[in-house]
Image 1 (tube, rainbow, N blue to C red):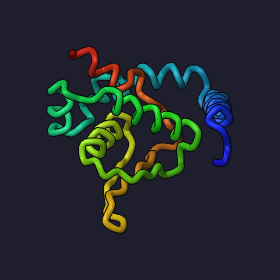
Image 2: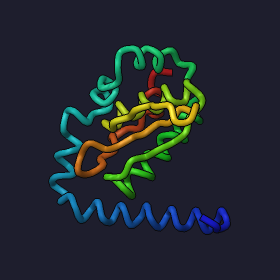
Image 3: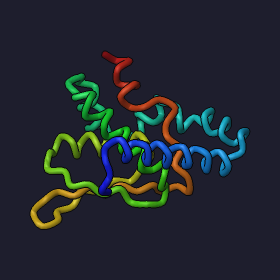
Length: 146
């Protein structure tokens, strides 16, 4: 996008707002409330979806929260606007990939790493018809333990 940072931010805010409006039209209020109450979407259950190995890594408490929050924001923005698209990122940092895999499991997204021309590529997709982010973000959930 050949626009200034300010213009890009305005476009992103507009797209996020449109996505929220579209999401509200898709789910009646009573369905949204039921979803929030569904046991599979409680923060604890979302955390339990993460593999045991990744959970133990996250519980050690040496997680760079800034990096995790940045990844959360990217995924939330992307899947709120385009829930059926595939998020793709080149990530050479193995720890960043590990965080993204954990985050995807927490958000009930599907992630996969692959080699593309000697670089590691991550692909993330949503296996559901709509994207319903967890009630509590992973970074906020982890901060409860620290």
